[in-house]
Image (cartoon, rainbow, N blue to C red; front, top):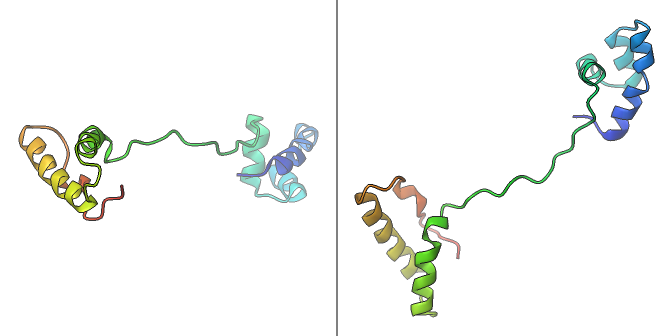
Length: 111
């Protein structure tokens, strides 16, 4: 991946490419690898930046409703108690045929 400035410098060399210069010569002038020069001069693509990634689901997401119910019932419930209940709840749901594994509820939950 090259910066926007490097891409602009490389694009300025496009007339030389059209005149028959090799990618190696253009890359030497631009200060990049010949494959990079070829990639950006052939495709005419702008230097793409990384954007924010879409949010991923958390392993705890299927259990947030249950945890919220427990917290509404007892706001002073301890995290270890929640973890024990989650482990038990997870085992019961797995026996009922739902997908997943026990590793979804770790030994150190973060609440």
